[in-house]
Image 1 (spheres, rainbow, N blue to C red):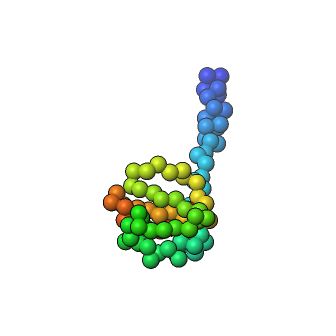
Image 2 (image 1 turned 120 degrees about the vertical axis):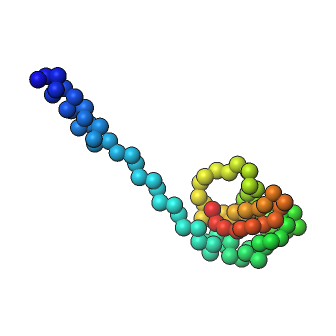
Image 3 (image 1 turned 90 degrees about the vertical axis):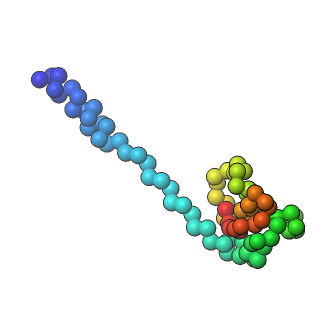
Length: 91
């Protein structure tokens, strides 16, 4: 009888374990960082574009490494391998 009762608390403990919920992804509203003002650059070559020196931006190529933090005040320029701007978004 003791053999059958011993695993019961362990089973109850394991049943109480739960995976943490994934944090909600923030909305990438292009208006929060000013990305809407740079949408006209889509299709342009990034080398030919002059960005303000005080602009908090990040240029992301297809295989470039980037941190996963979301910063609503930062503008991300997603660029093709050929240097063409494909998308502009906050983050």
